[in-house]
Length: 325
Image 1 (tube, rainbow, N blue to C red):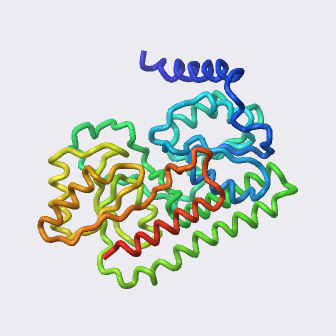
Image 2 (image 1 turned 180 degrees about the vertical axis):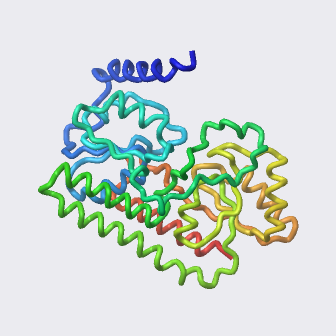
Image 3 (image 1 turned 60 degrees about the vertical axis):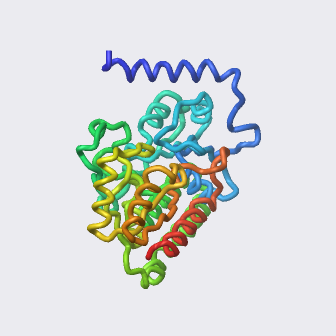
């Protein structure tokens, strides 16, 4: 039965889309204009909005719920049926919903851009395996990714590369608007790369840049902006570690002198991370929490604007500089 499940699921998604298309309101609305771009999650949508400027329309399938937990909705299929371009992560992060949607719901002229697949090898980081392989439930966990780390949007060179790729794709679709797309993409890419250039000076006085993070999402961010991820708390997003796992983390922090725990606004700070902080403080370690947003969600259900990505990135960097010892 298992081998037939993908086909049954695809049929079910298609059926639900057909069932809802006549009764559900058009998610694009009457005022939307081409090119219509759908992104699987917020960073890609924000990049597209910035590149398009005052042209076109952009929707994000994920907004307040991230790609790890996104569930199919009828409006997802409706978005794709009228879209001209579908932007996907391309390195397994969104495969569980985006691939099925692109195959079963895309219109006849819809283009698909799997951005991660275009990244040069020297810009790709291998999927991290910092977690304890003996952790109960570790094997076959639903949130484990492939051999390549899919969180590339948090790296400055990777983001710049993908932004330029989006501009190339849009330029092929609308040649008369190509120069505007390329100019706005270059402006956005330069903003991000300039933030990377400023970090060595901003972190020059920081004596300890080793951190523990919530889950395996910060490798590109750490590589770009000058700190080191030593371990992670959760084996998958939202999965609380066992007591033995927490005890190992406390021991490792004490041995390596780690004082910084990076938490994410999408997951509670009062559980494992707060417990770890408390345990370290009991032993006289001046530990602290720094909140870094991995940008897998955005607060606005309508999706991000074109300045959202740089705005959140700057806030992340400010908190990092302020919080590191």
